[in-house]
Length: 582
Image 1 (tube, rainbow, N blue to C red):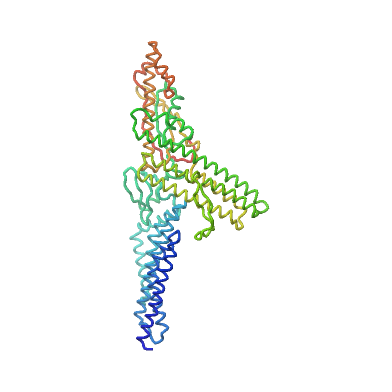
Image 2: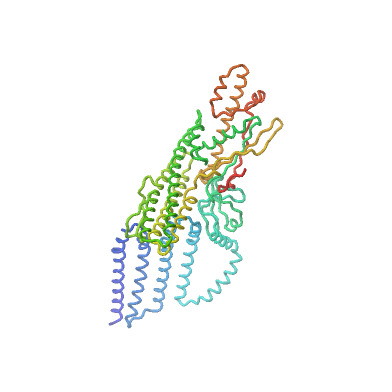
């Protein structure tokens, strides 16, 4: 067999083999992968098909030439073919890493609560492709017989020199790694910097961290080393509740108890403050609805009332689920004594089925694509999941929310729903197939209870209710006043560009001012009418629960309402998680 025939046969064999692989990839595997529920297999095939064909063709060509003894590939051509293989594999690896591994890992991290993965992925996306291409380049040079030892020595010396020249960049890089390992925040958290700026964390890069500053509506980029050296206050942890304090001064002749009661009702009546839901629903229609008020304020209260009613239903459903899980723990602890039997496992599964129904899930039969042998599907419109969706969808109608707020709210709650589904499914898997962990089943249930209480939704607590305290007596050249501090919580710090608390505080000031002004002026009229023997206004005051009775003398009353609201203090650094003192 002459050389030409050998080459033609080699090329023919290579072409046929490559063609068969092409048919297998595009006409057999692709239709199969299109039927899968998830597209990871199809995307992997799309990324891998042509690089795999190129590598296979070159390897086939080299093998067929090698088996034909009379034909030997020239050294230069063999080096070129090897280099092409290395380059294609490097490119293939980078594309698989970015389009498959990183893409689906990002999708996975959105369903988890860990923080390090959100910081790790951007750094991996930037560093790993560079390392792959550098390694591939070194291997290509090695195939042409280039002595890399001298290059490595040169690079080592250059690295030593560059280390001094680029020490700030390296410091920022390693600071980013430290922030990754011991991360005190995650994307979307609200941070208070040392200079008093409040911003939302957008991204941690290799060199800088990107923050969106609410007050100036701009992005700032802080070197990682600078950020690492700062004292940072995470206003979103342990909760996103926003603590607000404002000062009020009233004349000493005022009835302090009645004034405090009025102010407390005004705070509880606001749709966006925290407090006992039953009390809020009782007071929400009594305030913020005067003639000529802002239509947005009326709509805010109307939507807020609907939101509170659904939240009340969510809390009741959560409470029922937690009680059912606690009962399941007792059942498991009783069954664990002496070893759990198959019959007891079935009983536990039936009890857990009822809990899943309360959550809004149903266990489906085994599916082809589910290796666990079961799947949870949402099927109960009266379950917890649909109640949560109804709750946050009403919240999205709040006229004060910005466009990005609607994304924040829906994205956060859908992520929590996905985590709830994953946790419930994992627990069902443990119950169905304990695999030697029968004595730990009750611990897994208690972990779910703890997550429901601490991570899914915080229940309304006593420390979240508004507090009013007397903080001292202030005076000026004319008179003196009793100082009161009003402290309360707003539901979410990051909404409305971080100014939700300021808006709520402003509306509270206006409502308190309106009622106290009406009280003092009405009282002045009462005194004058009582002196003249006319008690008409007195009856009005007696039947008006919003008026605060005082004992001002007529001279003071003639000066008008002798009180003012001082400039409030925003105290975001004092966060939820501990009760008020005093």
